[in-house]
Length: 189
Image (cartoon, rainbow, N blue to C red):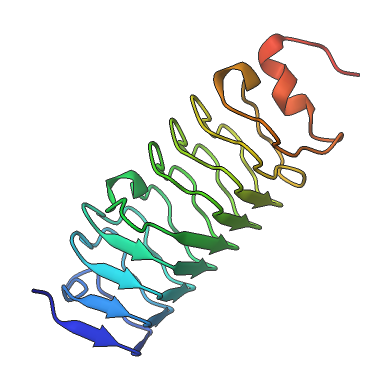
């Protein structure tokens, strides 16, 4: 049984050499912390917030994220698909998620706001009702992905085939619709 840490704020901590102590963190806030390449495996984060933290290439085998908010964080290369899928719920605001992997995860209603999601893998993920508000989706992979009622109206640089995804009710703007047609080799002028 992991120790329980409740309502604690961690500021300006560097865990790259010591590692974050294995525990269940409940309603905790991490501010300006460095967790780059740390092993967060089997650690639970419940209703936590990460602000301006670096979690690049963090190991996430069976990590629990329930109602976790990331703001201004660097999350490059994070293998979210390795997390405990039970109760998985996150949101991202002004984050760098380049090269992250979400394949097969249920991300229903997840908010991606003003974030970079370049070369992210959403293969076979469920993104029903997700919003990609002002997000860069360059070279992001959507393959056999559920995108029903997802909001892409302000997203940009996306390019995926609508025939390879479930897209009923997905929202797009007229100015960015060309990202859906590139796979058909249609010329838009």
